[in-house]
Image (cartoon, rainbow, N blue to C red; front, side, top):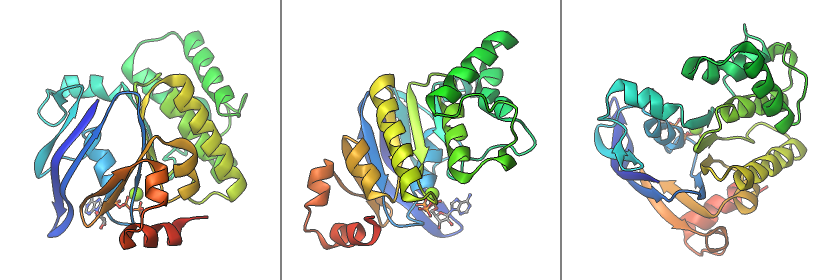
Length: 242
Ligand SMILES: Nc1ncnc2c1ncn2[C@@H]1O[C@H](COP(=O)(O)OP(=O)(O)OP(=O)(O)O)[C@@H](O)[C@H]1O
Ligand SMILES: [Mg+2]
């Protein structure tokens, strides 16, 4: 379970998080939506301790992420898969090296086992056999899928997806959505999907949380979100439905 309590963060007077409260029970898939720049990526980075809050807490399975010793934080990160916005692959490394990164950092598996796991994850995302390619040789959609394979490589308990379909055409977006929906069913992981994409919301998640003015403005089911007559919500849906 992830519990976010009164999380506050500003950057040089820019009050981005103004008291975010959100509880995500184990096994749930939740969408976090909100306007560009409202702090969705900042929120995800607090969950894995890449950013430190000014105030408030993030508890993962009851443990405070920002007060745990560094060693424990590294161990905790090993239980998270993170698909970064824009995939964030290392261009100088092969697909194999990119996907195995988390495995190499967190354990001492023999090369044959690394090869086996990477092959398995690439097959899961529909890209078998591309281990020796470099990211520059791949399309945007393929890069996202390689990023997804990397996030999956450690069999994480928690998956964080930051804009998995942004910048992709509708067909590729649907494929990625279907893949994430399938993965969330199979893995039983607790997942947070940050997205602008209402299609992803309706097809993948159990619950929607909308951020607005630095706080969680709404939480509810996709159906409740879609049928809301709150002007802030209906305006958002009008602009970001596809
Ligand atoms: N490391 C940082 N230093 C200073 N400002 C930052 C930093 N990270 C984020 N910000 C600011 O925090 C605000 C929220 O950024 P964030 O990336 O979380 O938005 P977002 O909701 O993910 O937007 P998008 O949908 O465009 O990805 C922005 O104004 C951004 O400029
Ligand atoms: Mg973002």
